[in-house]
Image (cartoon, rainbow, N blue to C red; front, side, top):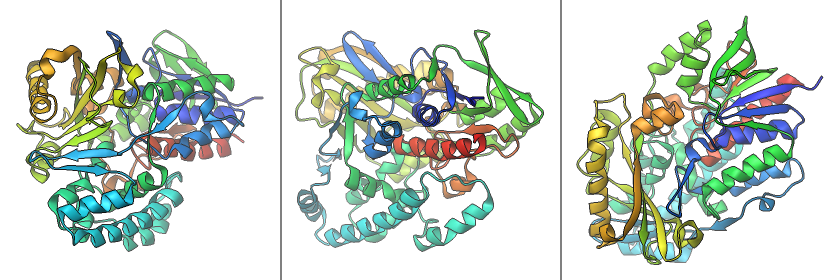
Length: 493
């Protein structure tokens, strides 16, 4: 008899897992609550503008291409990836710009302008990043940590690279200029981590970008999502949309079926959840003692912050504003402490500005541009914030900042705008506390200390996505899918 699997949630992790299972001959059904696949990589079309909801920085495209090669196909059949350069433009309020790219000559010239002595420090930092990349990503990035022994085996490499130190601490030991320290440590924010607290292992992102580049899916990240869904269905997989899962049925300590809001019931030999960790345990399997116990354990962990995202479409083209831009605020460490530790909504902010139409004008009407501005904000488990009241004013403050630093007449150019706040993450994605990246990527919440790819009590219940090893970000969740798929295929053999 053909083995059957059900994957809950069609985010990047769920899609990647479903493709791997279906490619291996497992009859796989992918069930998604929303009306289109993507999860945090949702999209909207408004007034002729295309707005990607979430991840916009694509690194390690080979980990995606592998999903097609498993069945002898080519990713280019379904989506086109184009390189982005510079990777990011970093901008400070004093007018300083720093273009981060893999143009090594130009990059070193920029570093020398900030501090000539830091050129050598940057070289040594890249050597460090290469070391943690080899250990943390190449060797361990798609390997499941199911027992403490696996953590012990990884410990020597972690110790060698001083994984207990933060990214910012390690960066600071190599370079002295504060702007450069920010430029080399902000990346952890893109996976939900505070650079002052996130393990230095995450410095591997620099090597990932240097080797593989930074890419954009023509038409938006949503086109990559749709390409994955198209490929999954081409292989014979079943995709159910707009039908939220309400329960994972169990018999003893086995998952036996999935029930949805529409009344559909699907039996399976194995069930995998790409849904929010807390939602999976507390709600979907809360009737089982394992669900109740694991939900209580998860409630004690540290969850990553949420995000406030302002989407806007404007008249005019802006070739001088690159695809990815970081607008640093007046504070760095203090701002992050306010958000991560105190849970207050600061008066100041740092912004990630996404401008896809500079790469692909088709994402807006002719002569127009699509943008979003993203600000990290506290999750809903910190101090109470009335987002219904504060969101409109917060959006205006973000526009003020963009007006002051980049587009002086932005308000007269706006054609359409809307925002996405922490309560939206909770409502649309069942995200615990409205967290945008699941568990915070601390060393004490990494690898074996993160959610396991196979549940410890229900042996045919599996997890995939940002809450599992290795963590958030497209390469992270695609890596988690590879680890989970290996377990499932071995168990279902």
